[in-house]
Figure 1 (cartoon, rainbow, N blue to C red):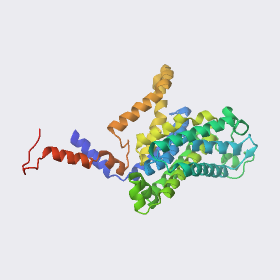
Figure 2 (figure 1 turned 180 degrees about the vertical axis):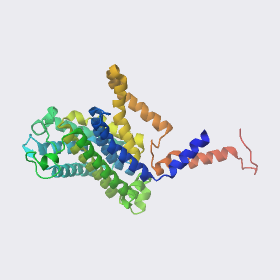
Figure 3 (figure 1 turned 90 degrees about the vertical axis):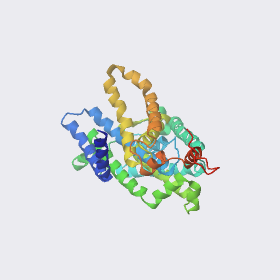
Amino acid sequence: MAAMTERISSVLARVPRGVYMALAVVLAAGFPLLNVIGVVETAWLRVGVMSLLFVMLALGLNIVMGETGLLNLGYIAFFAFGAYTTALLSSPKFELRWPFLAVVVVSTLIAMLAGFVIGLPTLRLRGDYLAIVTLAFGEIVRLTIINLQGFTNGPNGITGIYSPLLAGGSEVKTGLAAWLTVDKPIEYYYLVLVAVVVVSILLANLKNSRVGRAWNALREDELAAISSGITASRAKMLSVVLSAGIAGFAGSLYAYYSNVISPESFLFMQSVIVVCMVVLGGMGSIPGVVVGAIVLQALPQVIRQAAGAARSDFEVYRMLIFGVLIVVMVIFRPEGLLPDKLWRRESHEVDPRELEKTRQSLFDLEEGEKDLEV
């Protein structure tokens, strides 16, 4: 049995990763069809949309955490920037109805600008200090949104966000304009799926470029990377700004999909959940991050369905379950579910200092005789 399992594993390992990715895209594209034929309820389609949105968030955070080695605990703030920019530019709040592409671009740029502003003073920090500052930044953004009641409606949020029109202006939806308007769960699903695929392809190419290798060098040894000619501040700033832009893009799509946003959607725990997605899937691994986001976003819904009447108890212990799951992963599989090759080697390699201690305990070379200690 063990030999057969090992043989199957070796065969699967020889299959190019691109084949698995193509198969995953095909399965994701076919999922809404189950709703069309009545096999899957519409609620599950909504879970799919939210899972894809969190996949985008996890992909963005993976740039900072997995590739560059920076811990950001206020990442959800960039998500809020994108969502509120979209809500203000495409809602009755200010009687604006900008075209979809313009709103998405502006929302992404606003989030990137916020990433640049917060990156200037904080990227000089490292480790726990950087985590504390980013955590404070996320809370400052949320509290500012609550207190700017004349601009953001405070805790009441912004409602009535218009449905995105993929082409043309934003007039009454008739004829071709009605056909290009996204206002159904299945249409939102495919819109977000296309965005996820495009972002994943771009990040995969960026990961294998000189920029991606510079990020990895900074993550492994910043001093050695600087000595090799890498400008640390520039590389870190690029990772933070690009990561913030992806979060803003996801926030824009989220605002369109939810049709209403409020500060409760951007709590600190949302940042923690995105961090858990990256850690669970495998830091630095794009396929791993995708799997981790889908598992942590869809698994609660599966448990709710199975729990039935005990759903309220699950809500109480949901974060405890997440915490236990992450602890178990860190102990038994620290590299994640689908780890990056470099992370896998680092997680399983033996410390040279431990090897030296073992050698010294096994051999006594003082008198030229090998003396095995039991």
